[in-house]
Length: 311
View (cartoon, helix red, strand yellow):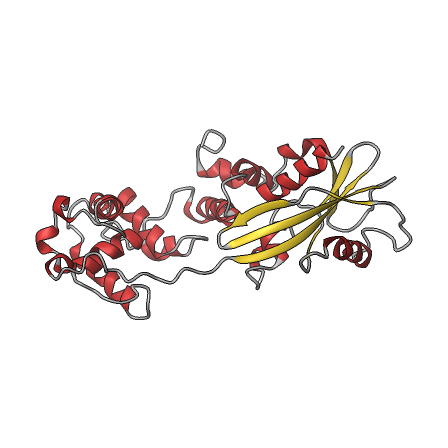
């Protein structure tokens, strides 16, 4: 907020600067969508955030919940929010069984939330509902004795407060093994690849592009477990990063561990000393010791630290 106090400054900023300031927060698509929205608000709405539901929903990264929260809190429009906390409150009030996100159930909860929405101060009402779900009507051990609406709660009357909502089966952890190539020239410079324009549209949730290439990154490839060195050699040759005649040493570094939502990543950095960094499309050279000033992910930062520690 200090750097971008209004939509105009955010809209005009280089994307790389936005991503650099966002670094460490994760979900970089949110930063990109935030700037895309700022640009649209400046271009199409004279830098004034729209107050119409359809116009707000048309902005990048804004769904029904966010739109309702913005419109009710900022503009006092009657749009009910429905997130996990609010859905749990409504489900218990009405003793709704089963998976709340199942087909047909969520729209019914949204409709019920709309019926409950107060005529005045809808923003305060929405915030109160979210707070109720976050503090008293919690997923486990709800504090029904302290709840201000317990007398209206069907789940409490039926002794179901502890079993509503039905617990969803958690997604299992996916183990992913990657290898990154850290090329270093005699001056201490390294080579990074630029984020491809299609990075936001990667079809596979566990695609390497999704995991590392949305920002400047080391050349990285997915590898079979235990075959990182062979895989990175093959990748370097096939992508023309290194010549097939290259006879330099590939130095395996201390492996890096990283977690992204349900994915547990083990990354094997491999350092290679070269006389000169290759010139390949969509790449750029940077001082290895100065990468902290760039828009790079935490995973890339960990790889850089491992490479610096190997000197």
